[in-house]
Each structure stands twice: as C-alpha cells, then as structure tokens.
Length: 414
Image (cartoon, rainbow, N blue to C red):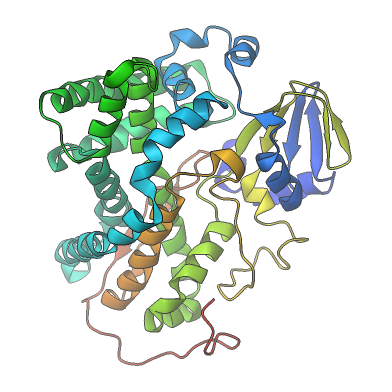
C-alpha cells in the first residue's frame, strides 16, 4: 500500500505467495494470490460483491459520498438478482456481432490519431502517448456507443481519474473528497444527457437505458440509470487506456517481439492476452463470502472480505512458468485481468479489439517510436497505468526490413 508498492507491486505479490494461495491479513480480511483459487472464487456463487449491509460495517457514512454511492448503485457493485437485471439491459451493446462491426471504426480512429501524433511529433518533439492516443481512442469508442457528443470527450479524463480513486483498497478523506467531486461532475453531465435523450431519442445505449427506466421504473431505477451510465463510460476507457499505455512500454522494451508483431499483425490476439497477463491494467477486485467456505486450505467464515489479487494470479508460476518473462508465444494464456464469473467485464471483447488493432498499427506506421524519458506511473494499485508517457515518433517512414519471427512462432498464431 506504500507509494513504491503501488508503482511496482510484483515483488510484494511474490512475498505474499510464499505464505500460501489464500493469506489471512486480519480478522475477516484475506488476500488471494493463486490463479486457480482466484478463478474459482470469482466464479463461486457463494462469493459476491459488498452489499449495503457490509458497507455499513466497513464504510460508515458511505451514503454521504457521491462516489461510493454512484459505484454501489451500478452493476459493478451489486449482486443477483439486481446485477443480472442491470447487466442484461446493457449487454445488447456488447454482443460479438456488434463488437466485430466496430472494427472499421476503431481502425479509422486509430489511423487518425497516429496522423495527429506524427504532426505533433515532427522534428523529434516528444508527445504524450496517453493524451494523444491511449485516452482518445477508447473514449471515442465508448462515447460513440453511449451517444456522447464528440466535443464533450475531453471532459471525462479528469472526472474519471478523480472518481476511480474510490476503487482503491485504501483511501484518505482527501482522496475521497476528490473522488466525490468527480462523481458529482459525471452525475451532472449524465443528468443533462438523459434529459436530452428524452427530448430526442437516438440509436445509442443511453437512449436504450433511458427508455428501460421510463417504461416502468422497475427494470432500472433513476439512481441505477445514472450510476450505470457513469460506470459504463469510466470502465469503457479507463482500463483500455491503461492496457494501451502499459502494453506499449512492454513492447518498446522488447524490440524483437515488437518487430514480429509489426510484421505479423495476425499475432495480435496472443500478444494482447500476454500483455494483459504480464502487466494487468486492473490489479485487484474484492469479494465477500455469503456463507462459510473453504479455499486454498483456509476456512473462510461468512462475511469474510477477500481481495483477489488479479495481478498476482496472472503471475502465478504454477499457472505460467517464468511468469516475470514477457512471452507472446506462451501457450494457453487466459488472464484474469477482466475478472471471471458473473462480473466478467462486459466490455472485455471491445478492449481486446482496440488493443489488437492499435499495437500492430502503431508499430507499422511509427517504426521509429521510442520512449522519451522515463514514464511516470500513477500511484494507484487497483487501476495500474501511467500518468504520462512521453514518446518520440520518428518520421513515420516504412520499416526497411522484416526482423523475422522469433523461434517457436513460425506459422503459429499465438
């Protein structure tokens, strides 16, 4: 939980792992570091997210916090049947057919953003990859789904950064005040957007959710409507921005592997899954046991609070040999970065699509792409990413030679 521990949690994960797959850290508080146990707990119906009863115990006064209240009324922090009801209403926007149909849109947006990077980075000037690409690409995609006007997209980065502080496992009163401010601004924005969609319905997810609420008020309450719009927006770009930033640094640190992806874009699905495993944009989630249970050789009383360390599970050596090595040809990579079970990330396929398009295109169009100094990590644990990521883009000329495919990859899509 220290600043240095949040910037690089991986050594601490290994120290925790030495104590067992499930480690008791307090009277009702447990940490899960093992891949198999994490996967099983996320899928186990005896474990849910924290409900109002437990929030009253752990977070007294939480109803006075706009940030906690917004998150708690969304599908992110509710259990069945409310979770199932809300998720079902939004799921239509994330079907495999609709995601596949968005590929051309993602390609066009990525191409345009690279043009902008080239223009701003001419003559060797450094550009911030996060501001110029990793943020605008996913925020443009999720805003298109929600029906948010393009002119409003720059507003959301600060609001989301402020709000997501509430997802950290520990938060100071000062940090909570910042999160509350972000939640209030997002809530005000979506209140206006909901009113606009009532006046003029459109073919977007906001309109669909507004109509679900207005039809009877039972399928979706007013608080749930606003909370889910906020979470869909923030989750729709925050984790993907981190995936793109984290992933680019890894690729630039591994030029041989980057060259193979540049020359073989069909390898992108395997690369993206390994990037998700190697440096997960989401490092942890939490679950609460509803009844006594046993996992990892540990008896868990009812109402035990488990922090499931996704970043640690993704580097479990029993699941992935040599887990600290980036290996895009690693077989059977199934990272837990998007969770598992009922709360598996609704937009996981969309995030994967954006990364699968972005990385080969960046490497192909910007063969001289390089870090410009040391990137600055955000002091966050739950959502792992960079605050700034300065790069130089070169001249955009085509690469002069194929660097070859690393051993073991020939003819095989990872």
